[in-house]
Length: 171
Length: 250
Image (cartoon, rainbow over all chains, first blue to last red; front, side):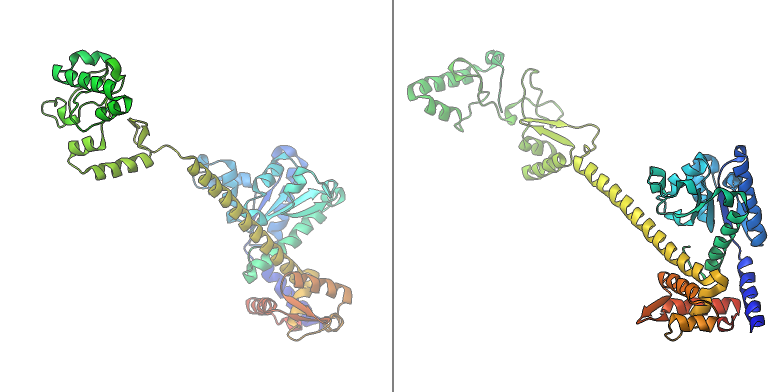
């Protein structure tokens, strides 16, 4: 019964899209140009796909952190990470690399979904070792330039949404 | 109690001096051992002093023989150049306690680092705070290491649980909810090919999904047959309950 099959799948997908997700997107700042644009595209795509989600950049959330002026950026980001369901990290410059290093041994590190250029794949360098315990994906230049990276992130976010729907944690 | 200053000789009473000289004379006659015995005898050789053949050390007065400071329970002001050890008995007399009690308290204070005893000398440490023991440093260092290790273990446990959950959720939702559909049909043991037929998919994607479900703890395999675990059953139940979708029909 293909009709009933498709209908059921649509129903499941709809439930996923309606999940209230709090997503952080870390990556290069405004000055970096294309990488910042990519962050914005990811935010837009996620907010479109998951209609009740809230996708934010860390730099826009300082007002959410109590006594933000009294604590360092690391603690502010830890607070934001604790509040979020997941955090997409575009490993495109020194800023996000430092964030990854900072949270590499943090119990919240499971929330990080790191995307790194595939030229670093198989590397045994210190930065690569720091990323070993993290959920780490690689992308090619072609994927980065096209929309497929954004689609991969949306697909991954469906897992997070299902986890939230079923009460499965941590994801 | 000992006196080290020969100058005090002049200040001693004539009677005592005579006694000291008498001992010295007797000592010369009786030999050094006897002289030592006389010096240590309980006879009140008050304010024994150095001089002549007696050498530089001799018994001194007991505290009761020292002049008392008016209005004070402390035994009197000794000349500046006399170093006098205050015994536990002296302290006990001063404060009106037993010597045993004073000894016990002094020992406790020493153990606690409030007092420092070097030979005959007792010094008070100020402020009255015990010195930082190297053991405390060691203990704190180990505690910190342990805390770090526990944090690391906790982090590793969460990361591992997250990886298991991700495998399960990914398997359930990917490939058009293939994992969820498989789970709904695994109430009884089935082979991969049976399952492929049931869900209308190829054996390869079904095998991949089963492997992911197994990694996620939702499926067990035995003798080439697959059966959902308690966790798998729980996932199917929750999904059907929250979405209202009959997965067997999906």
